[in-house]
Image 1 (spheres, one colour):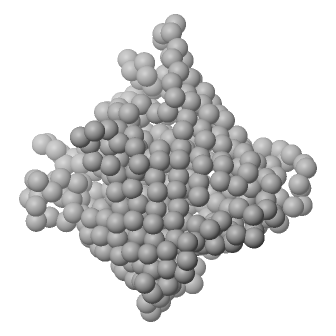
Image 2 (cartoon, helix red, strand yellow; image 1 turned 120 degrees about the vertical axis):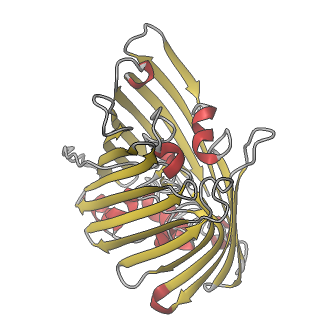
Image 3 (tube, helix red, strand yellow; image 1 turned 180 degrees about the horizontal axis):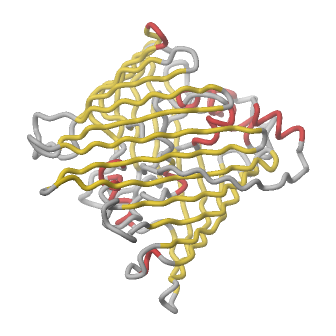
Length: 402
């Protein structure tokens, strides 16, 4: 893979950081997303699909056996050797029919507001931020996954659940049946599962992950799970999926259904995709969400871009919301990545001077197996009457995975 070849050629050299900005959108996981467990730039850099590394064919949560081996032998700074005398359990495989996985995330943040002399710091994200997307106060901080394969490689039952939640609040759950190896590399999912949301990555605390106050995109797009069914096909370098799930507000529209589709092509070194959802609000109105995303890998550099729009009908017309994402990743050497990121969100394209944006500079060492870290800073800009959108943030994030 390209990531491995370039890492070996310049094992102890630091290449110059190229500046490149592309406009696009982060729709949260929510995320993730990035995802969720890995990052979108991994798939673009290596020229693979989401299903290469995730049991959920549209990405996120439990990893495949390939992803486990790749993560522990090729991606980390100390990759190679060690513990291979226990190959099955070392990679989460209990036996031929049962495999497990887990994620634990933590963070420490320090924030200084430009219009206030005070600063504050805390461990982890505010609980109200996680609740806005995950239906529980603790978000994606600790999760476990179990896959049962009565017919290995053909039929699975997949389960996932958040281990931390507040009393009285339902934890985030995922449970679905997956049938694979259909014609045209097709599959069917039935149950509760993560929906495709473009270049989503929840570990990286996306801009729209509960941060853009007043915006409608957060509760709509960041509802990353759906209850229903999905049909997909992945012939060659292409991936197309269609899903029908319950609407975001089934009380108002008990007979309505959210309809979505996603299509992308991995044309190494270029990845191009589009995702769209139509979600009924009541018997007469529906939200429409559309996202376009792209990735490009050039040697040590991997670039991502996305732009998404949301149209919400209201009395007197529709309110249109838009957000963007542009990202450049530089592979210093194996296990060490630098990320330059620009994000922006316009909660109402018809209103002047209400855009929020932030610029981030992040160092990501994958120090050893099971452990990824992030050290970074973000500078936020927005309307001056909203102090929380103007200031600088410093943070440390850890992600332990199995």
